Length: 251
Image (tube, rainbow, N blue to C red; front, side, top):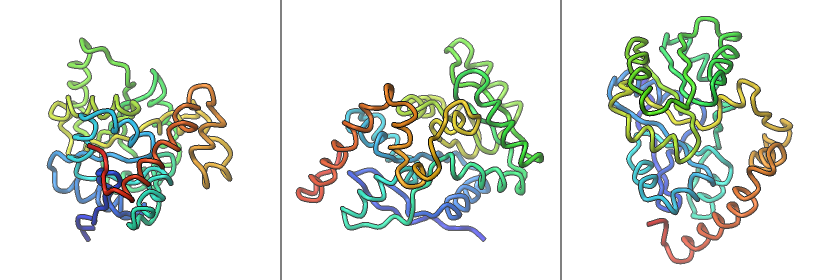
């Protein structure tokens, strides 16, 4: 049965669909069946902070067919703005449910992202649990002169879904530029999921990332991520509280 288009809330003027993990995958299944040109994105605190200074990213997020809450900060932000989101869904969590659904439905899935070998290693992990999956991995560092060959390989594979994980805002800009060339019914931005699934990056202790994903990431990569979280989280909260008082979101 079709899940139907979910309702949406706005966090700082950016859309977030009201979804659970199962209804997220139901909606993706609807988009695959529709055989159009749908794009899926996510919202977390880092994405919001990047969008605050990037008009192209804001336009991209406002134009996608599906956008879900990737972090607990977005769920909290919605609550402070008197709206409700049922849960946060990070790629490292939903990817296993997605793999089971893709295997059952026979979806052809291309995965572009990470350093050379990372997407392939992530696909190998999925195949170990779901050997019937139809997967095509590509790394995320193709120079412009090699992208034509990348698109030719994708056309030969004929994916139903293309997963793109290059980090924000690189992945969103890349998808916006190349959406027509990707061709698949669904193109899905999913961040660093391949790094976690492949074991290239440790996600942190389960008890911590289940309750405070940002803190688990900070513990594992403090030198790279301290600005994102120790400065970015308070900045995001200040923006949410300002919207609560003034009604003003991002531009």
